[in-house]
Every structure is written in structure tokens, then in C-alpha cells.
Length: 143
Image (tube, rainbow, N blue to C red):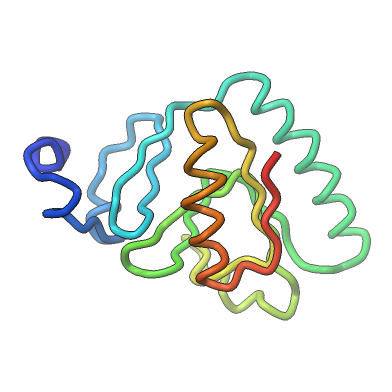
């Protein structure tokens, strides 16, 4: 699969969720945005500290108020066949629980949180912002 990706240009190649499932687990996070495959290395310690602090606060609030569920990456969010992301933190309200399956989220979460870095800043600010708006994510936080 990786060899094929190197030979074809992005214009020639539209990755799908089925292709994504064929990728080998190498410890990196892969996402597909508008058919283009993106790789993100494992997050650094600062990212993980922010994730755990913010995620736990949000999770405790949501649990206390019985509002829904908070999940953390890695968790596939399938917006379409050619749009599969792994937000750092996501929230799905009780009303939208039907999008949660045993393996992934199939549809737009109510809240998506991306903890950005130098390698993901443009993707988070431009591509994902547009993508989440297109598919109906109600709230998008960039930390």
C-alpha cells in the first residue's frame, strides 16, 4: 500500500476508508481528508499532558451532567468514505449516540478538539476546519 502511494500523485489517488483499514499499524496516526492520506507521528509529551488535562476535565463535566460521552484518539471518525479523522478529543451528545459503533464513530461528533503542533497547524486551521464545518460538527476547538 505504501509503495503504491509513493508512485501515484494525490491527483491520481483517492484514499478511502477501505484503503485505510489495510494500513499496517506502525504507531503513527493516519487520517484521510478529501481522499488524501495524512500521517502524524506519535504526539509529544506536552501534547499528551494537554490532552489528559483537558480531556479529563471535559469528561468529568459531561459525566456529571449526563450529557453524553467523551472519547480520545485513537478513535476513527468516519465522515464519509474519503474523510476519516482521529480527533484528539471528541464529544458525542446523548441525542447523537446512534453514530457510535463498537469500532468507530460514523458521523459528526458534537465537539471536536485538536491539540495542534507545528506539523499539524495548517491542517488543523484550514483543512480540518473546513471539513468539520462541511460535515456538521457543531463545535471545533483548536488548542
